[in-house]
Length: 376
Image (cartoon, rainbow, N blue to C red; front, side, top):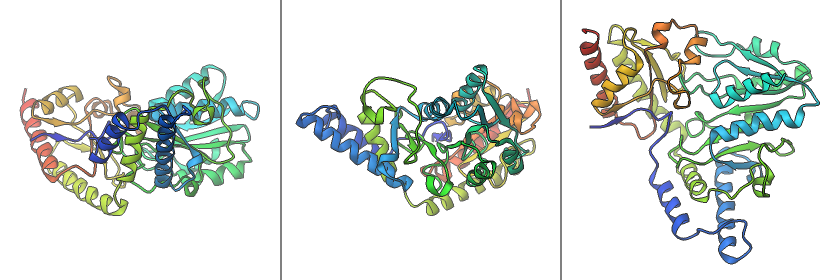
Protein backbone atom coordinates (compact mmCIF):
# COMPACT_ATOMS: atom_id res chain seq x y z
CA UNK A 1 0.00 0.00 0.00
CA UNK A 2 0.99 3.66 -0.33
CA UNK A 3 1.32 5.70 2.87
CA UNK A 4 1.18 9.46 2.44
CA UNK A 5 2.29 11.18 5.66
CA UNK A 6 3.36 14.61 4.40
CA UNK A 7 0.10 16.47 4.95
CA UNK A 8 1.80 19.56 6.37
CA UNK A 9 3.26 20.08 2.90
CA UNK A 10 -0.03 19.51 1.11
CA UNK A 11 -3.16 17.44 1.52
CA UNK A 12 -5.10 15.28 -0.95
CA UNK A 13 -7.98 17.27 -2.42
CA UNK A 14 -11.39 16.29 -1.05
CA UNK A 15 -14.26 15.30 -3.36
CA UNK A 16 -16.26 18.43 -2.51
CA UNK A 17 -13.38 20.68 -3.60
CA UNK A 18 -12.85 18.77 -6.85
CA UNK A 19 -16.54 19.11 -7.73
CA UNK A 20 -16.48 22.85 -6.97
CA UNK A 21 -13.42 23.38 -9.17
CA UNK A 22 -15.03 21.49 -12.06
CA UNK A 23 -18.25 23.47 -11.72
CA UNK A 24 -16.36 26.75 -11.90
CA UNK A 25 -14.32 25.61 -14.90
CA UNK A 26 -17.26 24.17 -16.82
CA UNK A 27 -20.33 26.15 -15.73
CA UNK A 28 -19.62 29.41 -13.89
CA UNK A 29 -16.42 30.40 -15.66
CA UNK A 30 -16.91 34.16 -16.05
CA UNK A 31 -14.81 37.02 -14.72
CA UNK A 32 -16.43 38.24 -11.48
CA UNK A 33 -15.52 41.83 -12.37
CA UNK A 34 -17.49 41.76 -15.63
CA UNK A 35 -20.89 43.50 -15.72
CA UNK A 36 -22.82 41.07 -17.94
CA UNK A 37 -24.79 38.04 -16.85
CA UNK A 38 -21.88 35.59 -17.10
CA UNK A 39 -19.76 37.91 -14.99
CA UNK A 40 -22.51 38.50 -12.46
CA UNK A 41 -22.91 34.75 -12.00
CA UNK A 42 -19.21 34.52 -11.22
CA UNK A 43 -19.44 37.47 -8.83
CA UNK A 44 -22.30 35.76 -7.00
CA UNK A 45 -20.19 32.62 -6.67
CA UNK A 46 -17.24 34.67 -5.40
CA UNK A 47 -19.47 36.20 -2.74
CA UNK A 48 -20.70 32.75 -1.74
CA UNK A 49 -17.09 31.53 -1.47
CA UNK A 50 -16.14 34.50 0.67
CA UNK A 51 -19.10 33.86 2.96
CA UNK A 52 -18.13 30.19 3.30
CA UNK A 53 -14.61 31.04 4.43
CA UNK A 54 -15.92 33.76 6.74
CA UNK A 55 -18.23 31.21 8.35
CA UNK A 56 -15.26 28.90 8.89
CA UNK A 57 -13.41 31.71 10.67
CA UNK A 58 -16.45 33.12 12.49
CA UNK A 59 -15.87 36.54 10.95
CA UNK A 60 -17.52 38.90 8.46
CA UNK A 61 -17.20 38.21 4.71
CA UNK A 62 -15.89 41.75 4.32
CA UNK A 63 -12.87 40.80 6.41
CA UNK A 64 -11.67 38.17 3.90
CA UNK A 65 -9.07 39.00 1.22
CA UNK A 66 -8.39 36.13 -1.18
CA UNK A 67 -4.76 35.57 -2.21
CA UNK A 68 -2.80 32.96 -4.16
CA UNK A 69 -1.81 31.15 -0.97
CA UNK A 70 -0.28 31.44 2.48
CA UNK A 71 2.99 32.96 1.29
CA UNK A 72 1.31 35.86 -0.46
CA UNK A 73 -1.04 36.44 2.48
CA UNK A 74 1.91 36.49 4.89
CA UNK A 75 3.80 38.94 2.67
CA UNK A 76 0.76 41.18 2.45
CA UNK A 77 0.29 41.11 6.22
CA UNK A 78 3.91 41.94 7.06
CA UNK A 79 4.83 44.36 4.29
CA UNK A 80 1.37 45.91 4.13
CA UNK A 81 1.41 46.65 7.86
CA UNK A 82 4.91 48.15 7.82
CA UNK A 83 4.12 50.35 4.83
CA UNK A 84 0.94 51.60 6.49
CA UNK A 85 2.49 52.21 9.93
CA UNK A 86 6.04 53.27 9.11
CA UNK A 87 5.51 56.69 10.70
CA UNK A 88 4.31 55.19 13.96
CA UNK A 89 7.36 53.11 14.78
CA UNK A 90 10.10 50.88 13.46
CA UNK A 91 10.04 47.67 15.53
CA UNK A 92 8.76 44.31 14.31
CA UNK A 93 8.50 41.40 16.74
CA UNK A 94 8.47 37.85 15.44
CA UNK A 95 10.02 34.51 16.34
CA UNK A 96 13.04 32.54 15.18
CA UNK A 97 10.82 29.64 14.07
CA UNK A 98 8.42 31.30 11.63
CA UNK A 99 7.67 30.09 8.11
CA UNK A 100 10.13 31.32 5.48
CA UNK A 101 7.50 33.67 4.02
CA UNK A 102 7.60 35.59 7.30
CA UNK A 103 11.32 35.16 7.98
CA UNK A 104 12.36 36.40 4.54
CA UNK A 105 10.02 39.41 4.72
CA UNK A 106 11.48 40.37 8.08
CA UNK A 107 15.03 39.88 6.83
CA UNK A 108 14.33 42.27 3.96
CA UNK A 109 12.82 44.82 6.34
CA UNK A 110 15.89 44.55 8.57
CA UNK A 111 18.06 45.33 5.54
CA UNK A 112 15.93 48.44 5.04
CA UNK A 113 16.70 49.59 8.57
CA UNK A 114 13.74 48.30 10.58
CA UNK A 115 14.34 46.97 14.08
CA UNK A 116 13.38 43.30 13.82
CA UNK A 117 13.34 41.30 17.05
CA UNK A 118 13.53 37.54 16.57
CA UNK A 119 12.34 35.85 19.75
CA UNK A 120 14.07 32.64 20.73
CA UNK A 121 12.17 29.53 21.77
CA UNK A 122 12.58 26.96 24.50
CA UNK A 123 13.38 23.29 23.94
CA UNK A 124 9.75 22.64 22.94
CA UNK A 125 9.81 25.32 20.23
CA UNK A 126 7.57 27.66 22.21
CA UNK A 127 8.13 31.39 22.62
CA UNK A 128 8.38 32.45 26.26
CA UNK A 129 5.63 34.87 27.23
CA UNK A 130 8.03 36.98 29.30
CA UNK A 131 10.32 37.39 26.27
CA UNK A 132 7.36 38.39 24.14
CA UNK A 133 6.23 41.00 26.66
CA UNK A 134 9.76 42.41 27.00
CA UNK A 135 10.17 42.78 23.23
CA UNK A 136 7.01 44.83 22.63
CA UNK A 137 7.54 48.56 23.16
CA UNK A 138 5.98 51.83 22.01
CA UNK A 139 7.88 51.62 18.72
CA UNK A 140 6.42 48.22 17.83
CA UNK A 141 4.21 48.35 14.74
CA UNK A 142 3.81 44.62 14.09
CA UNK A 143 3.85 41.39 16.07
CA UNK A 144 3.75 38.29 13.86
CA UNK A 145 3.63 34.82 15.42
CA UNK A 146 2.43 31.54 13.94
CA UNK A 147 -0.33 29.59 15.68
CA UNK A 148 1.14 26.12 15.13
CA UNK A 149 4.71 25.45 14.06
CA UNK A 150 4.89 23.78 10.67
CA UNK A 151 7.82 21.49 11.55
CA UNK A 152 7.28 20.27 15.12
CA UNK A 153 3.63 21.16 15.84
CA UNK A 154 4.24 23.45 18.83
CA UNK A 155 1.24 25.64 19.67
CA UNK A 156 2.21 29.28 20.33
CA UNK A 157 0.60 31.66 22.89
CA UNK A 158 -1.26 33.87 20.41
CA UNK A 159 -4.09 34.79 22.78
CA UNK A 160 -1.81 36.71 25.17
CA UNK A 161 -0.34 39.12 22.62
CA UNK A 162 -3.21 41.64 22.61
CA UNK A 163 -2.84 42.24 26.35
CA UNK A 164 0.90 42.78 25.97
CA UNK A 165 0.44 45.26 23.12
CA UNK A 166 -2.02 47.26 25.20
CA UNK A 167 0.21 47.25 28.26
CA UNK A 168 3.13 48.54 26.19
CA UNK A 169 1.02 51.25 24.57
CA UNK A 170 2.23 50.03 21.19
CA UNK A 171 0.59 50.93 17.87
CA UNK A 172 1.20 47.35 16.73
CA UNK A 173 -1.03 45.21 14.59
CA UNK A 174 -1.04 41.53 15.50
CA UNK A 175 -0.64 38.98 12.71
CA UNK A 176 -1.03 35.23 13.08
CA UNK A 177 0.05 32.67 10.48
CA UNK A 178 -2.66 30.06 11.10
CA UNK A 179 -1.95 27.93 8.04
CA UNK A 180 -1.15 24.79 10.08
CA UNK A 181 -3.95 25.42 12.60
CA UNK A 182 -6.96 26.16 10.40
CA UNK A 183 -9.12 23.11 9.76
CA UNK A 184 -7.50 21.26 12.67
CA UNK A 185 -8.35 23.56 15.56
CA UNK A 186 -11.12 26.13 15.94
CA UNK A 187 -9.59 29.35 14.58
CA UNK A 188 -11.49 32.51 15.52
CA UNK A 189 -9.51 35.72 14.89
CA UNK A 190 -11.65 37.80 17.24
CA UNK A 191 -11.21 35.38 20.13
CA UNK A 192 -7.47 35.26 19.49
CA UNK A 193 -7.35 39.05 19.51
CA UNK A 194 -5.51 39.34 16.20
CA UNK A 195 -5.84 41.96 13.47
CA UNK A 196 -4.55 39.84 10.60
CA UNK A 197 -4.62 36.08 10.08
CA UNK A 198 -3.39 33.83 7.26
CA UNK A 199 -5.01 30.61 6.02
CA UNK A 200 -4.34 28.37 3.02
CA UNK A 201 -6.43 26.06 0.84
CA UNK A 202 -4.10 23.16 0.12
CA UNK A 203 -3.47 22.47 3.81
CA UNK A 204 -7.17 21.66 4.38
CA UNK A 205 -7.85 19.35 1.40
CA UNK A 206 -8.48 22.18 -1.05
CA UNK A 207 -6.59 22.93 -4.28
CA UNK A 208 -3.28 24.76 -4.46
CA UNK A 209 -3.29 28.39 -5.61
CA UNK A 210 -5.70 29.87 -3.06
CA UNK A 211 -5.28 31.37 0.38
CA UNK A 212 -6.70 34.26 2.32
CA UNK A 213 -5.80 37.03 4.72
CA UNK A 214 -8.29 37.99 7.41
CA UNK A 215 -8.13 41.77 7.92
CA UNK A 216 -10.12 42.93 10.93
CA UNK A 217 -12.77 45.55 10.19
CA UNK A 218 -11.30 49.01 10.63
CA UNK A 219 -7.68 47.89 10.16
CA UNK A 220 -5.79 49.61 7.34
CA UNK A 221 -2.81 48.04 5.60
CA UNK A 222 -1.16 49.03 2.32
CA UNK A 223 -1.20 46.96 -0.87
CA UNK A 224 2.06 45.44 -2.04
CA UNK A 225 0.76 44.96 -5.60
CA UNK A 226 -1.03 47.49 -7.77
CA UNK A 227 -3.63 47.13 -10.49
CA UNK A 228 -7.38 46.73 -10.38
CA UNK A 229 -10.01 47.12 -7.69
CA UNK A 230 -10.33 43.43 -6.78
CA UNK A 231 -10.15 42.37 -3.13
CA UNK A 232 -10.49 45.94 -1.85
CA UNK A 233 -7.41 46.90 -3.90
CA UNK A 234 -5.26 44.89 -1.50
CA UNK A 235 -4.87 42.03 -3.94
CA UNK A 236 -5.50 43.34 -7.48
CA UNK A 237 -5.94 41.01 -10.42
CA UNK A 238 -8.68 38.62 -11.47
CA UNK A 239 -9.41 36.14 -8.71
CA UNK A 240 -8.40 32.53 -9.43
CA UNK A 241 -11.97 31.37 -9.23
CA UNK A 242 -11.42 27.60 -9.64
CA UNK A 243 -8.97 27.57 -6.73
CA UNK A 244 -11.08 29.93 -4.62
CA UNK A 245 -14.19 27.80 -5.23
CA UNK A 246 -12.33 24.65 -4.26
CA UNK A 247 -10.99 26.40 -1.16
CA UNK A 248 -14.48 27.42 -0.05
CA UNK A 249 -15.82 23.90 -0.65
CA UNK A 250 -12.97 22.42 1.40
CA UNK A 251 -13.79 24.82 4.25
CA UNK A 252 -17.45 23.82 4.16
CA UNK A 253 -16.41 20.14 4.25
CA UNK A 254 -14.34 20.47 7.45
CA UNK A 255 -15.92 18.08 9.96
CA UNK A 256 -16.36 18.64 13.68
CA UNK A 257 -12.99 19.66 15.09
CA UNK A 258 -13.30 17.71 18.32
CA UNK A 259 -14.17 14.41 16.66
CA UNK A 260 -11.39 14.76 14.08
CA UNK A 261 -8.82 15.85 16.65
CA UNK A 262 -9.61 12.82 18.79
CA UNK A 263 -9.18 10.50 15.81
CA UNK A 264 -5.85 12.07 14.78
CA UNK A 265 -4.65 12.00 18.41
CA UNK A 266 -5.29 8.24 18.46
CA UNK A 267 -3.27 7.86 15.25
CA UNK A 268 -0.46 9.96 16.74
CA UNK A 269 -0.46 7.91 19.94
CA UNK A 270 -0.10 4.72 17.92
CA UNK A 271 2.73 6.32 15.97
CA UNK A 272 4.54 7.53 19.10
CA UNK A 273 4.17 4.16 20.83
CA UNK A 274 5.77 2.47 17.84
CA UNK A 275 8.59 5.03 17.70
CA UNK A 276 9.33 4.71 21.41
CA UNK A 277 9.78 0.96 20.92
CA UNK A 278 12.62 1.61 18.45
CA UNK A 279 16.04 2.26 20.05
CA UNK A 280 17.83 5.07 18.24
CA UNK A 281 14.70 7.07 17.35
CA UNK A 282 14.26 10.44 19.08
CA UNK A 283 11.02 12.44 19.09
CA UNK A 284 11.62 16.16 18.66
CA UNK A 285 8.02 17.36 18.94
CA UNK A 286 6.82 18.25 22.46
CA UNK A 287 4.19 15.99 24.08
CA UNK A 288 1.56 18.75 23.80
CA UNK A 289 2.21 19.44 20.12
CA UNK A 290 -0.73 19.45 17.74
CA UNK A 291 -1.32 15.71 17.09
CA UNK A 292 -1.30 16.22 13.34
CA UNK A 293 2.48 16.63 13.32
CA UNK A 294 5.38 14.62 14.79
CA UNK A 295 9.05 15.38 14.15
CA UNK A 296 11.66 12.69 14.80
CA UNK A 297 15.37 12.10 14.30
CA UNK A 298 17.45 8.99 13.69
CA UNK A 299 21.03 10.16 14.27
CA UNK A 300 23.41 8.54 11.81
CA UNK A 301 20.87 8.39 8.99
CA UNK A 302 20.69 11.63 6.95
CA UNK A 303 17.17 12.81 6.15
CA UNK A 304 17.63 12.54 2.38
CA UNK A 305 18.88 8.96 2.58
CA UNK A 306 15.98 7.96 4.80
CA UNK A 307 13.37 9.72 2.64
CA UNK A 308 14.67 7.98 -0.50
CA UNK A 309 14.59 4.60 1.25
CA UNK A 310 11.03 5.13 2.48
CA UNK A 311 9.84 6.46 -0.89
CA UNK A 312 11.05 3.27 -2.59
CA UNK A 313 8.64 1.48 -0.26
CA UNK A 314 5.75 3.86 -1.06
CA UNK A 315 5.98 5.66 2.28
CA UNK A 316 6.12 9.44 1.94
CA UNK A 317 7.33 11.82 4.65
CA UNK A 318 9.50 14.95 4.58
CA UNK A 319 12.53 16.38 6.33
CA UNK A 320 10.75 19.63 7.20
CA UNK A 321 9.05 22.56 5.51
CA UNK A 322 8.58 22.14 1.76
CA UNK A 323 9.33 25.88 1.41
CA UNK A 324 12.79 25.37 2.92
CA UNK A 325 13.87 22.41 0.79
CA UNK A 326 17.56 21.47 1.02
CA UNK A 327 18.09 23.77 4.02
CA UNK A 328 18.90 22.87 7.61
CA UNK A 329 15.90 23.35 9.86
CA UNK A 330 15.97 26.75 11.58
CA UNK A 331 13.29 25.43 13.92
CA UNK A 332 15.25 22.47 15.24
CA UNK A 333 18.38 24.61 15.54
CA UNK A 334 16.45 27.24 17.51
CA UNK A 335 15.22 24.48 19.84
CA UNK A 336 18.85 23.71 20.65
CA UNK A 337 18.96 20.24 19.13
CA UNK A 338 22.37 18.82 18.18
CA UNK A 339 23.42 18.83 14.55
CA UNK A 340 23.06 15.04 14.34
CA UNK A 341 19.34 15.46 15.10
CA UNK A 342 18.90 18.34 12.67
CA UNK A 343 20.48 16.54 9.73
CA UNK A 344 18.49 13.34 10.32
CA UNK A 345 15.08 14.87 11.01
CA UNK A 346 11.87 13.50 9.55
CA UNK A 347 8.46 15.18 9.69
CA UNK A 348 5.45 12.87 9.83
CA UNK A 349 2.25 14.84 9.31
CA UNK A 350 -1.26 13.44 9.40
CA UNK A 351 -4.70 14.47 8.20
CA UNK A 352 -8.25 13.37 8.88
CA UNK A 353 -7.85 11.06 5.86
CA UNK A 354 -4.84 9.25 7.33
CA UNK A 355 -5.47 5.58 8.17
CA UNK A 356 -4.18 3.15 10.79
CA UNK A 357 -2.67 1.12 7.98
CA UNK A 358 -0.55 4.08 6.87
CA UNK A 359 0.84 4.51 10.38
CA UNK A 360 1.74 0.82 10.55
CA UNK A 361 3.28 0.94 7.06
CA UNK A 362 5.51 3.83 8.11
CA UNK A 363 6.62 2.12 11.33
CA UNK A 364 7.44 -1.09 9.46
CA UNK A 365 9.38 0.76 6.75
CA UNK A 366 11.23 2.86 9.35
CA UNK A 367 12.32 -0.26 11.20
CA UNK A 368 13.44 -1.81 7.93
CA UNK A 369 15.39 1.33 7.06
CA UNK A 370 17.21 1.36 10.38
CA UNK A 371 18.03 -2.34 10.19
CA UNK A 372 19.34 -1.97 6.63
CA UNK A 373 21.06 1.41 6.57
CA UNK A 374 22.62 1.55 10.04
CA UNK A 375 24.30 -1.79 9.35
CA UNK A 376 26.29 -0.37 6.41
